[in-house]
Figure 1 (tube, rainbow, N blue to C red):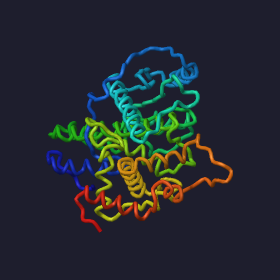
Figure 2 (spheres, rainbow, N blue to C red):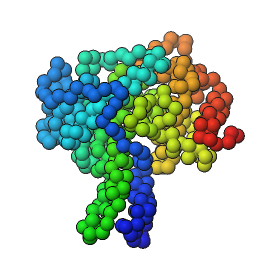
Figure 3 (cartoon, rainbow, N blue to C red):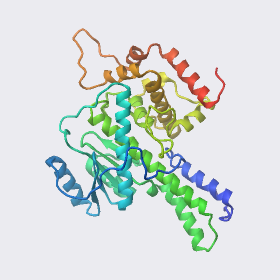
Figure 4 (spheres, rainbow, N blue to C red):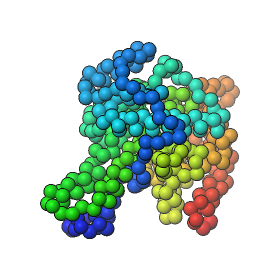
Length: 367
């Protein structure tokens, strides 16, 4: 990356663009979202006042601190954002589609949605920033979250999800600044380069919106709470399995492919897929960037495979971690591998079936 790349060299610029984006770690090159959705557009109105007084107080507190934010409302969500109105409306549609996908998922597993205490009749609160620095500032002020690598998160304690637009990611800014520098010099820029950046940013933002919305919806509907006691691979894997391969299509773990399938298949071809046992044993996500990516990809693809091929077992496994589940005095609470095998049987046998299936789907030879 030290040598100068000719801006007129389209291939060279694309390579530079990809290399810079790889520095973002969890970001992946995929395709952009569109405004159409089979779920239909949500109602979008701008107004103040709601029957949920606690929600109103929380919103007022945030707007007092961030006066540039505007309020948007969809069927299920209250959105506070300083983004342009068309972006906020697009994200509102993505959120509504995520809610539909969660409903499809729960129908497949025969797990009815319930209303968490204090949320019945209310909307889910979403806070969206254009600026990464504003996002980080809010995360520290509101939720004591200080992980600078995050693009978004769900806060169970405060009941809201927060994210920033991927266009303000440092790796994306470096690429955009480089193109702007070439333009200032009067050097020709291939329009496809800007289109590639825009497509990447749109899809990455959509993936974060949907991922965090799934965390919030599963938690607030008491399907799978975002609790430290719950398996991290399951909590993150389910959210990851909703990330879309193509945002123009329906998404969710009921689909054969998601936004992490392509990277998973690359890991599979290289023999670097984490074992099911290692996923079950994890207390936190790996600290190493590459290991963390493989953890998220493997968890997402495994969750999707289990939903499609072992729906009854997946429902039983999720119910183990439900906060409403009670255990008798003579019944041990299962954990780790014991809980998994109680729902799915022997780990080794299931892992063989799973990887054989994934290899066949990827066109790879079976072991």
